[in-house]
Length: 284
Length: 280
Image 1: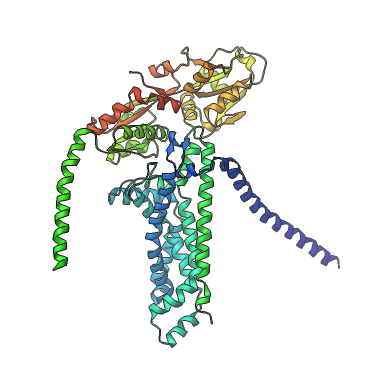
Image 2: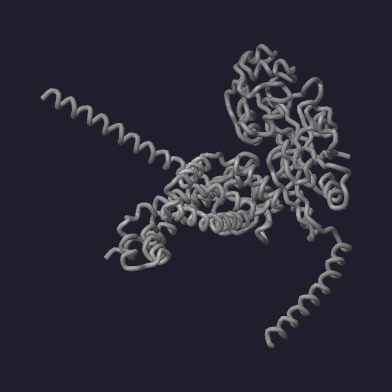
């Protein structure tokens, strides 16, 4: 009896601690959002979203910065998604991917995922900007980011594909479907939610990136006219306004609000697309 | 047959187009400057250079000035290897960097400020170090009132902080601040509102505020008054030059830009960034 009460007491304490831990996480998030929104929300307007920055960002808006961000993100995803899909299919669907070669690829991906982003920035500057002659440009920034998000994209895609039960593949083989058809019509739709999650993770990492882009896509705040122009992304703009420009703290908060809104928007739409294409297609 | 005819027409059009466009671009080159300049380097200078570049672009519509950042050392390295046409360095060139040419576009001076009613007129470097490391904590030890000193210090990453620590040979971790502030205006307001405070801000800001009646006083250093004029002349010690760097004697577009960046027409931009313009 005594023991039981004691155990119940311990359980209650543990439960309380778990609640506290969860509450702490939520409180941190609310604090950050509350702080940024309370200081940044008042500075938002249509002009802020479409105008060019003036006075080094203390006045004007962030139109070109927003466009550059979207272009860098577009280049990154256009380059990374096909490569990631190919590598993930090899790792999960081919016997080669389950042997020594596959293990080597997985190991190198895990190492690549742990490389600090500034290292990718210096690599991108040396390889894309200098050796390939792209200079400071949205293209070299996007490609550098692509290298950076590849490990996340490949591993999440691979896991999504591996999670599709083998019975699906065997059933498809039994009715004589080709492997390409099996992949296109069965595996891909089944893995879609996992793919969307990986896509969102990759984009989140790309949007948050400062160090990898400072030396590749650069610092220029002019409207970009081509992918070979240099253009500043939102995270670098925030860093510069907060740390480098006196009297621009409010602008930094407003820019942060825009960045958070962009991340949320992309998350929600990617989840919606991934969710819509989920299981239904192949389950009876 | 038709496709081939079409090809011929298209090719002709392209050739004619090329023929038309080349004299046009030659005209532009005669009319004004064309081309692209890449600047990299000091994050202190980058925002100013960005604005100078925008104004230069407005006056020369066929010129692009791309300003990148990354720090003074990167600016020097990029200028050496040709990645940048012009580097930006917020310090003088070191002994092993004398192969490069430097052109000052502004100076960055930092002044100690106290409240206007504070009787202390001047402090030695040792006294300032003692105040900021917490060895002296009362104004009466410095010939002032019997009151505790409120030490106002800058947040990490501010250019004025680097100049201040660099001049006094202090490590940021040794400083014992009472208040940590962000930008210059905040420093001026903190000292103006506290009779016993001491702080340091950009000279340009402090002068402008003192002139409009804000109750602060700029303290001299080593017998030299803290004024923009002394910073511009290079005689005030707690200051540094903001330099543009080139690998060889600049030519063409670089010359025009360097001349513009050192001219009267950008002095308002220099002052807006709380730097002191160069007086030729």
